[in-house]
Amino acid sequence: MIIDYIVNLSIYTLFVSIPLVIPSFINHKRVKNFRLWLGVYAGLFFFILVFLSFKQQGYSYDLRFAPIILVFAYLGPMAGLITGLFSLLARLYISGDWYPIIIGWGIIMICYSAMHKYSTRLTPIKKIVHLFGAYIVIYVSMVSVYDILRDNPYHHLQNLLLVMVGIIIGVVLIESYVKLHRLNGKLLKMYKKIEESESKYRLIAENTSDLIVVINNENSICYFSPSHKFVLGYEESVLEGIELSTLIHPEDVCRFIETLNGMYENIQSQSIEFRFQHIKGHWIELESRCMPVKGENHSIEHIVMISRDISERKKSEEILLQSEKLSIVGELAAGVAHEIRNPLTTIKGFVQISREEKKFDFHDLLLSELERIETITTELLSLGKPQAIQLNRMNLRELIENTLELLTPQFNMNDIHFTLSVEESPIFITCEKNQLKQVFLNVLKNAIEAMNKGGEIHINLKKASDGACIISFQDQGRGIPEELLPRLGEPFYTLKEKGTGLGLMICHKIIKQHDGSIFYHSKVNEGTLVEITLPLAC
Image 1: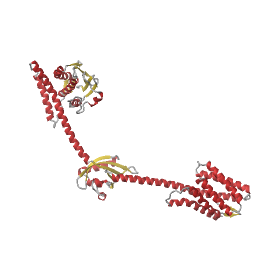
Image 2 (image 1 turned 30 degrees about the vertical axis):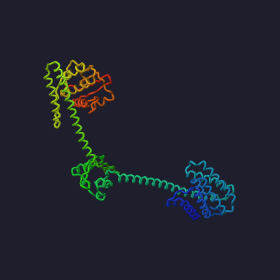
Image 3 (image 1 turned 90 degrees about the vertical axis):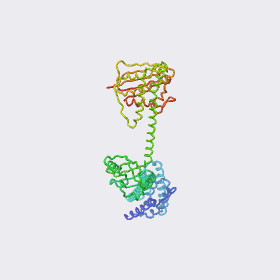
Image 4 (image 1 turned 135 degrees about the horizontal axis):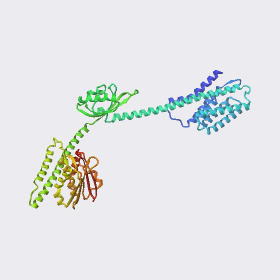
């Protein structure tokens, strides 16, 4: 009897395994209505199981209900009904007692079909438990009704155990296959992603113009990107095994090695520029970004170095630098010309007054202004050897009054009056008087030009609370739109038809040299307020 058990279960296991194993060796698409075809396969396989059934004391033992339960649980009622129909035909073929067989089969099929509607959300294993429980109830009921071996219930228990063992074997095989299938699917997706990722990185590495080098912790080259051939002319076979420092400019080798060694200590990415020798002998300027790659023990195992040819950029920077130098020279020349105009205007005004009044008492003043012209010219000539400005302690009120005295002729000619408000206590600052006088002249001349119909200029000098003083100039000119105020002081930016845009730029530079600041407040047709803040003398 044990041998019969083993034979039946072995053949049953074989038939359950065949549809699980064969697809693993065949690359095929899923067959249409494969559930129904599996039901047909299970039904055909019933004929063999029924013919292999063995008898003890006139009672047959077989596994036909084990596949029916498995098919209902995994494939649904349609496949289960097909399998059950084959099992009925096989059982009727070898048995003469048809009536109880048909009734029992019908009850089981109806019960299983009904249970399927209420167990759709259950897992296959839970479905199998419910179906097997229903089978036990129906089996016991049929045995009781038809009085089959009532005096020897051990045979019925043995038959139920045989079916249960068959179900357990089938569940183990199917669930193992399902899990392996899912795992295999995940592995295939992972392999596919890895292949796609490798393909993308290979596409990037083989088609980028950047030079990619991978260096291991022994400073040996593990990888050269193909771009080395296009940028430097070297074949990959030539670079393999070569010492990288032999191709780096001798002046850059030490810095290159120090950068790599420093990365092992600091474990931080570094940037470096060095010259690399082309296969034809000339040097290529490279800009490299070196990034450390950590291993499992958090130590650096590789360094990835991505380099870019910056030779053309270096040439462009040199050309731009030369262009900027020329531009600065042009600005300086225009600025010098602009500043020479101021003393010349003063001289012109006094000469005109002298001509009208038939007298000439301004010799000292004219000589002072001519000295200013000489000073400006000297500064231009000594451009190659700049000299530090000489700062002296000055009374700011006297400096402003001297400036106003210079502009008195222009005030009179343009019908402009000025008022000077100063605190009683003297205000001393440390400055270069000619430079500050130049600032005040520029600001006042701008105010005169903005007031073509005359008016008043209010000048206020006071101390601030933070160890500084404030000089403010308020005119009654046409004003400046607020959106243009931030641009005042930019080179060549001017609101005048014949202006150069350099006057205020020079003012800003001078005030900055004196650790001060300059601000503008203006509204159209309401005039402009210029506030200059300078630190007081210690």
